[in-house]
Image 1: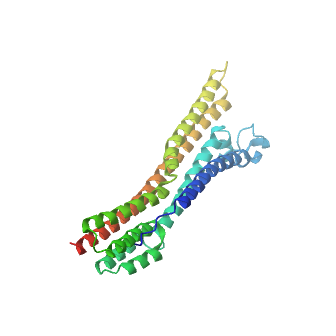
Image 2: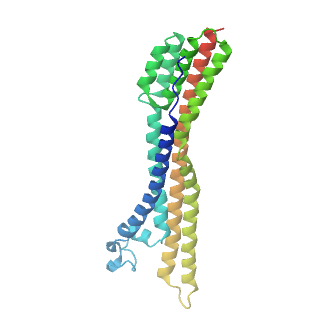
Length: 276
């Protein structure tokens, strides 16, 4: 008796390991690039009066202002780049999971073929569509054919077997879609907290300038306030984009899950209706 093909566990494990390696490398590289941008782009001597980093930035030069915002800036730049790297990576993965065509049209076509009993044609559509959604639906259709080839089986148990096959395949496919979303969710909090840390260090410097004997050091006071505000703005920007990307990606995954559930329900219901 032919069974629906299972997803290869070693392949899934290898894919998971490569995903972990990508995440680790991406985090390290983003921090390195963030530091290099801060040190050599924003810290370019041309951004400062007299070509000296210790001097005030050239009037209107925001790169020099950001450089003077302190060592928290390269960390925030790294976090900001991580948001975009992981968001783009998830967009690519979810796009592949959706397949080659529109998911909604594909599901409707499969449902139409189910009504006419064209199971083989529906399976061919899955091969044409590809992606996680098609893989799950194909597994359900193959199980449908499997139980159809054994008319002596109990109809209720056969319907449950089809449903279980769909659920098991979904359980193998969906974790790959949600992978690294926890990184974006973590960046929502870390971005704000790191920005707050930069704000505190900037305010400490500002109050230190006020605490000096005699007239306050206006340059140090300005640098301290500038550091506080720049770190706050960068931290908020990082968290804002992380929230937006996380919600967009979650909505896309929910849409795929709904499509799988819709098609799976149609397969089970069609079998149950044909074997009353």
